[in-house]
Image 1 (cartoon, rainbow, N blue to C red):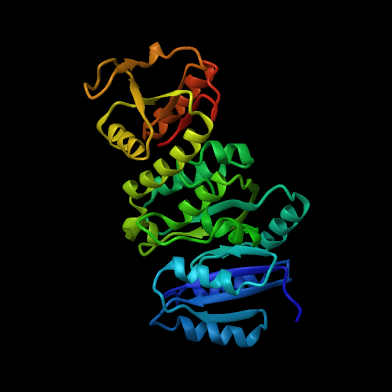
Image 2 (tube, rainbow, N blue to C red):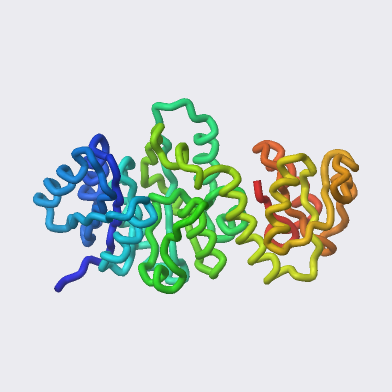
Amino acid sequence: MNRSIVSVVLPFYQAENTLERAVKSILSQTFTDFELLLVDNNSMDRSVEIARQMALTDSRIKVFHEKEQGVVFAMNRGMQEARGKFIARMDADDVSLPERLEKQFRFLQQHPQFGLVGSRVKHVSPLPSKGLERFVKWVNSFHTSDEIFQNRLVEIPIIQPTVMFRAELVGQYGAYREGDFPEDYELFLRWLDAGVLFYQLPELLHEWHDSETRLTRTDERYSPHAFYKTKAYYFARWFLRTHPQLEIWVWGAGRKSRQRARLLEEQGVTIRGYYDLNANKTAERLCRSYVDIPEPGRQFILSMVGNHGARDQIESYLKNRHYQPGTDFLLMA
C-alpha cells in the first residue's frame, strides 16, 4: 500500500462552522503527498456529516472517531493512525496558507538536525484581545533553535497548530499527556528538554483564528498557575542537570514572583534570594537591589517579572552586564 509522506492530524469537536474551511485549506496545499486525518471527538452538531461528505470527495481524507473526550485523546488517536514520515498539526478553526506543508516538509528534508518546525502566524479574531496580539507578535519574532530554547519558559515558543515534526519523535519522547497542565506546552517542553531542535520559518504560513470557545480561554489547564507548574518542573529538570554548582537568585520579589518561586522549591530547587528595584522588598528571604548583581559566573538569575516592558528591560540590563541567556540567566515570565 502506498503511504503519504505527511500525515495532517486535525481533531475536531463541535466545529460545523469552521471545519470545511480548515479542510479546504489543507486540500489547497501546493504539496499534495499527504493524508488528512479528521478525528471526531464526540461532536453533536453537523461536524461529522461535513467530515464524511468531504472524505467522499478526496481519498486522502480519512475520518476517525475518538470516544475519550479531550483534545489530548483525539490528537493522540490521530497520531496513532498516521502513516506519514512527518506529522503536521492542524486545528478545526484555523486556515493553513497554500505553501505551508511544502515549505515545512522541504525544511525538515534539508535540515535533518531539526525535529520540529513551525511558522509565523496571522492572528485573526473578532474579539478585543490585545494580550493575544502581543503574544503572537512575540512568538513571530523567534526563528532559530537558540531563540526558541532560551525563551521557552516565558510562553509557549511556537503556536501549536502551525507545527510539522518527524513522526519518530512520538515513539522516542512520547505523545500528548493528559493532566492538569496545558498539553501542548508540556509536550514542547518535554521534547526540548530531550534535546529536540525546533525552528520557526520566517514566512507567514498560517492563520490562527481566535474565538470565545478556544480552550486557552475556557479550560483550567491553561490557567497561569497550570503554566507555571509546568515551567517549574522543566526548569528544575534542566537546571539541576546543567547548573548544579550555581545559586539561584530570582529577579522579582513581589507576591506573584514569590508564589512562582515556591513552585520551583517544590521541584527541589533552592532559591538563595531575590533581586528587585529596592532592597528588602520582602522579608521572606534575602532581598537585594538589582544594582548589587555581581559579575556573571557567581550565580544564576531567573527573572519572574511578568510585566512585558519590564521583562525586556531586565533582559537588556543583564546582557549589558555580560550575562548570557541560558548560561547566566533565563526569563520565566
